Structure formats: structure tokens, C-alpha cells
Image 1 (cartoon, helix red, strand yellow):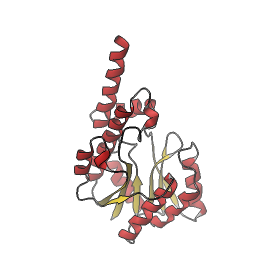
Image 2 (cartoon, helix red, strand yellow; image 1 turned 30 degrees about the vertical axis):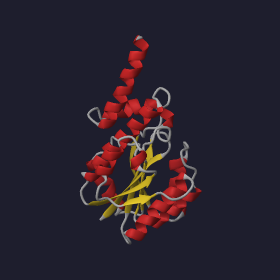
Image 3 (cartoon, helix red, strand yellow; image 1 turned 180 degrees about the horizontal axis):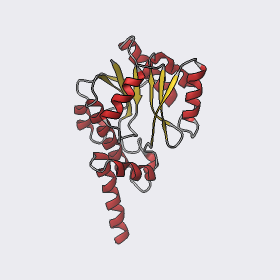
Image 4 (tube, one colour; image 1 turned 90 degrees about the vertical axis):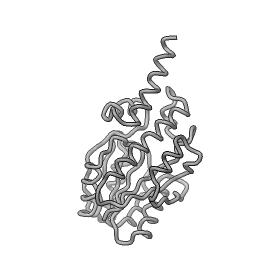
Length: 226
């Protein structure tokens, strides 16, 4: 059974989704991040035949919607993120899961794609166990998912610059350089800036994420009217 690893940061104002500011305030950005994470956790919980694990930076006790987030992950293994940069933290998270679940493939996602569905996650998880690696490219050149049949190969990420327009391409090259046979997952748009938030919210209008984005839009519109 594939381990579905969610790598997330506690949605503390000023520490998450800072590229949404402006037009959002830090508190609004944190609420949007919390909503995205809760929508993601819901999708993971509804995905069949996976073992959910959370790798968390920070504490839900300090976060927006922290009580609800803690409840949403009740019963999940929660691993503290280790390392100084994103690449190092991702490599450590995969290694920690490999130690806890030896021999199991790992599909890792983040909290920037609240449009994910259980169906899409289940398909990606099945594919993870069938090939050496899978990579879900993001529209901005990053990636939204990495699946590894042997999660210890995530140490190749240490040499990959993160959060750049070339991150997915360089990750793909690093996997190939390790001799891994990789398969692509569908390209998705992840939420970095405000334009991303608006576009993604339109694809999931009934979710918490879309409601929080709409709340910011109403605030902005009210300010213009004044």
C-alpha cells in the first residue's frame, strides 16, 4: 500500500502564502492556506488504499484553524520536518517515511493544490507503485507531486533548486540521472500568487479554499466601493 505523504506548513499569519500579500493581508493569506490544507486533507482521507502521513513544519496550535486541522489529522502519523531548506526537508521527510514504512512506495504532495480529488490521488498512488518514479509538473515549472517506489531516492532533491521555473525539469533530470524510470502525472496549477488563487478557486467553487478566496475578494470590493 502506498504511503500518501502530505508535506505542509502550519498556517501561521506572516509565515505562509506571503505571495498572496497584497492583496490579501497576512491573516487572510493564512486562512486561505488553512482552507487549502483542509481541502487537501479531506481528499487524502477519502483516497482508498493509501496510508496517510503528515510531515509538518511548525505547530497547529499556533495556526489559523489549528483546532480543526489537528482534528482533521487525528490518528495520522505526524512527522516534524527536518532541515534548513525545502529540498533538504523533502529528502528527510521521504527518508523518515522509509524508516517507518520499509519497502512501501511514497507519493508526496503539498498544500498548494486544493483542487486535488480522491480519484486523482488514487490514480497517482497506483502509478507510484508501478514505476520507479512519478512527477506531477506544475504549470509554473515546479511540481505538485513526487512518487517514488523507493523513497530513499528523494535524496536527489538535495541538488535541485526549489521554487524556480526549472524545478520540475531539473527534478526529472535528477531522477533520470539516478537511473530511475519516471512517468509524468497530469499538469496542475498550484497556488503561489493571487492570480493562481483566483484560477484554482474557480475549479473548486464549493470548497473551503474557494470560500476564503471569495471572502478576500468581497473585502477588496467593499474597499473599492468606499
